[in-house]
Amino acid sequence: MLNKKTAGPLKRETDIIVAGRHPETYYGFVNPPVYRGSTVLYPDLATFEKRQMPYPYGRMGSPTTTSLEEAMTRLEGGAGTVLTSSGLSAIAVALQSQLSSGDHLLVTDSCYAPTRKLCDMLLARFGVSVEYYDPRIGADIARLIRPETRVIFLESPGSQTFEIQDLSPMAQIARDRGIVTMIDNTWATPLFLRPLDLGIDISIHAATKYIGGHSDIMLGTVTANEATFEAVKATWNALGECAGPDVAWLGQRGIRTLSARLKEQMEAGLTVARWLEARPEIAQVLHPALESHPDHALWKQYFSGASSLFSIVLKPGPNAALAAFLDDLALFGMGASWGGYESLVLPFDPRAVRTATTWDAEGPAVRLHIGLEAIDDLLADLEAGLDRWRAAGGGS
Ligand SMILES: *Cc1c(COP(=O)(O)O)cnc(C)c1O
Image (cartoon, rainbow, N blue to C red):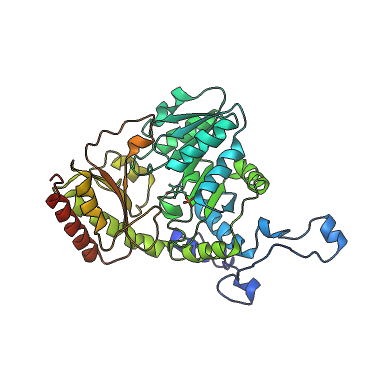
């Protein structure tokens, strides 16, 4: 879509619009068609013998998947991108692309819980030794590195608890020792953090979330730099990973409006976070863009914005009060995932999974996702919920 004669360096908002679009190859239509297909026909034996088709088989992609791959590669600044069937499978592809039996893997204690299960259940069975580290460890990660350490897995902010990691020194320490770094960049989206610019090798997204943007797809992306992309692509291929054409199409459609949605949701998220911070029922708001967040300075250093996912810790109260608060919310649905147009709540307890860090909060914790509803309606819904919390014996 770029007119190479006239396009200079572009802002990320513009990249999101133009990258991976080739209307000239689809009769001028703005968006790519959905190529539904398994078999790709070769015109003759010579072409077949040289595998000389741009798309040899449906699993290896189509112009529909290329559209989103190119957009992600441009936005993340990598050498290439593969699409996978979910965010979790993207993490699995990235980890398996770099690890072998006997290797040591360092994983942030704040990782998405299913990432942990993948490491403990599957990678451990294949002979990888998995060790969890405090997400706030920073340059002290050097103390955990062994001769056989092969990968450091990062996620910032941490799932549910929103610790921010000191990415640059960690990436540098790894690079100096020939260790690959990879990050789950789902929270920031490609708009608000460019991990490869900080020296991180691989950036992973659950495109299920903000990139899809409408709570209607499962999709993952892995974008890698020159040093790691070949292994990522080979592993992706060997595992038979792929995203179906309709899902890939929805992903490339969703990403075009990412910056408009995220700007709106960033503001709405901050407004709700600040409002909650002033409420007597709330012990703590875990939102890295709030000045009160313990890692706020690191967030400012690395991120150019915030998405609309954050957590609160309530003052202590009985479970019945939590149910009174959450069960009758009118606009906040209770459920996993996030990044769509609608607001969500999800209670959580990090004590259930963490091993390298402790969680001392006395009251219950709830993760909030702020969607695109009118702020006043969301605040009224939360206010009524907090009234119910107090009436049912919740602390204030
Ligand atoms: C949801 C999520 C994933 C997994 O994505 P799925 O598409 O649900 O498999 C991975 N990482 C983070 C941070 C997530 O929130």
